[in-house]
Length: 455
Image 1 (cartoon, rainbow, N blue to C red):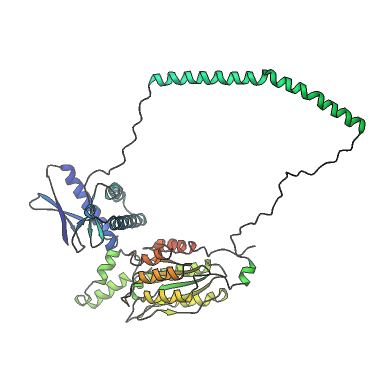
Image 2 (tube, helix red, strand yellow):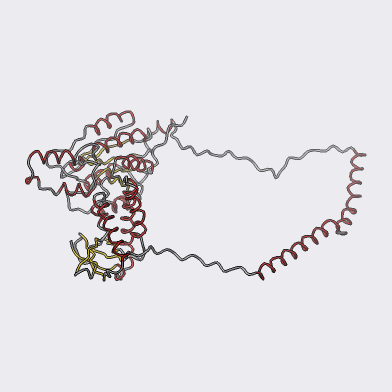
């Protein structure tokens, strides 16, 4: 842990001492429930140098730079965007957790202070870190409303009186204007004369069709469903590839925080007894885990996808390449679901060839003459190749502009966000079973491929 900065601490300020204790309590509460990356935005305070200063520390490594000292406006906007994303992740995790009334009061009091624009922001290796000012949140100043004077209302009454008189004069003019009467008297005899001639001559009246009557054109109804013709002619229909992470990390439980999982992955099992190691492993892989929950929501999502969409499965199991299947039509979806149910990570040499999976999936789809889709369900980044997956995503976006990639990020690490961003897709963070169900549903709904058959 390195020190970012230090600020003078006055022990006579009882309010600041109280805020410091509250803030440390907040950090202790959040640390075990946030991912390491999300928690890293919060610098950790310690009283140092004989209680003369507050030192602000971070687990991030690198040279701290003040955000305000960065000259590049574009880079500064990137950091600010990343900071907002981390704060949003923080709020999402908090909403999904259960707290006591005291803990909830503590969090509610400090969230505005964390988002306070008066805080000092440092940047360490492209990651933002908040040094809290312990000051009340800066809110926009209310707009001052000038007091209304009596003279204004006096003028207002006068204007109403003038307006009333104008309306009264207008009504009198309308009903008693002599020019209107003269014009009516001139036209009346002409009308009566024409009437008499028509009565004598008994000229038959031929009713003419109304030439001004608009022609009614049939309105084409836009149906949000699939017709039987579309089901029969399936050549132009969209296709979808589901990329499923089947690596060993997917066996980790969804009932522990990312911090606990990181600690587990770094544990020295050789220092434990065999029983301790087995008990620890059972705890950290207990159900519901990432794989079991992902299978469940994937099977449910497949049932919701409309019948004219063929689906292929790409699995990420081991290096060097992902495994692919042919496309399953609607009548073979039970076979696809059976294959997903049987997915199990390898005991040894398990890995995540995500770059290979995305590359192969894109080659299986058109994405030029029709809308095609890729749905990635994963908890991490590629660990089989050094090739840049963001570069691959940019190439796909250029060559296949109608290919959209959505991501369900189970670990919330934001390591492959560029894949969705480049192709016009979205990233859906899911770190517990409830979020996974909702976010998978959102990811599929966003593709607009869940239309029912027209009745």
